[in-house]
Length: 581
Ligand SMILES: [Zn+2]
Image 1 (cartoon, helix red, strand yellow):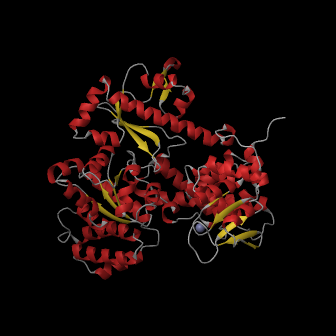
Image 2 (image 1 turned 30 degrees about the vertical axis):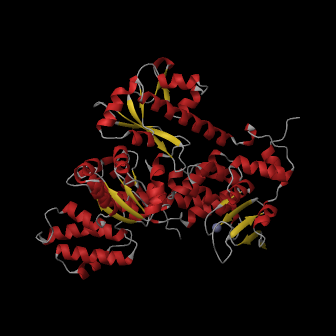
Image 3 (image 1 turned 90 degrees about the vertical axis):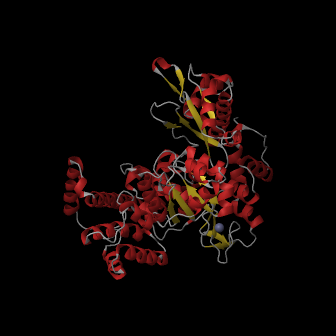
């Protein structure tokens, strides 16, 4: 007979209510669930909920949730294998240390990938200091990087030639499949394995825990692309990863602020000059996911991009994204220097730090960008146009006091009455000033009720996933809702705890959402099959309306295809009967 999976065996023998009670004696029954004040955060009214039916817990106050394994892991500060071992003892299940069967397939894959990435980083670093890396090392030293900095950021060199990195890693026992999965190798014509990074300076990218999860590579000559990043993997969610965050975290925590600069070399230059609270997006635009990620560590952000026009425009956009996430943002630049490197050399480290901790309010920054020669002498029509653009930024500010302060500043600079600006701001329909390409997602922190209800029905009745397989995930407006639906489709038979585990790495918010929806009690559920189909229809309808608004707002610049799409949706909306929302 095949031995039982010890994890499942533990699950059947340890009841979550008993386990939690050992740590939270005040746990009391409330309806179908149990409730108590949360052991993970401080509160006076109980929002910590345990579901005995589903064997999971969730706190409505701090969003922590999981099963017996995550509960013990988090309350005792253990690793997953340690928690599993303790629970095995409690359940009287035989437990062998390091047994592979103890880890889920996903956890095994992540462990293997991490080992591989660590080995690769060490290998790239070895190449940098070998004869093959001579030119690269000279380049880095020429950019004034000290050996200490090179070591701190684990910089390396990927040589050209016949796949030296892939060959070396394979000889150490890593499989070709794992190399492909990690984005370290690819196949060329004829199926020959080749290194993904060739003749590039390597910048290892770490997650906040310090694990190497990806690499950035920069060429030394003028070939394209100048920068190349690892492809997305289970370890590397590109949209939310920030370069330098791990290295910057101690200083970000100490100072309570973070500076966002443009690229790898800017981060390194700032750190070397002593301003070690700088991070950068990975060659892509900043996203609301980045903002969300940073909001965990600091509420005060300075955006400091290069001092050219492209950098300043990007800074304004970035500032608006961070404001949408409810953060306090300042915008700074390095002029007359072009980047932090040059500023530190020309004006000294103290000046660099000053720029990175001060900066202008986004409206002032935008005003200077749009009207570099001053605004008071403009014609009244030009003033009105300029005011509209500035009010777009004001409208995103959530803090009313800051908002009124900004109106005062704009009024003074444009030499127009403040009341006129306030009236103009109030006149705009709510939402009009919000950028169309970032719909509900950036504005609301939680998915809309219709999407929550829809997912809750599916979580309660996983069989119904089949009824709504036509619904594209993109029709859901909120990223967490999309992630949950995708996870359910990928593993239709998974329990809520299993889904949450699958989601935890890339999207902890979506994992928490699964737990939250699973412990919540449903009001009524007369006909779940028809309810879920109805909900899917409404979600699609809202998605079409969002798209329509988006197209309408950029009416002037639509291409013929988009125009046709706009007309189609317009006809569709007109012909379908208005439903009650
Ligand atoms: Zn809590």
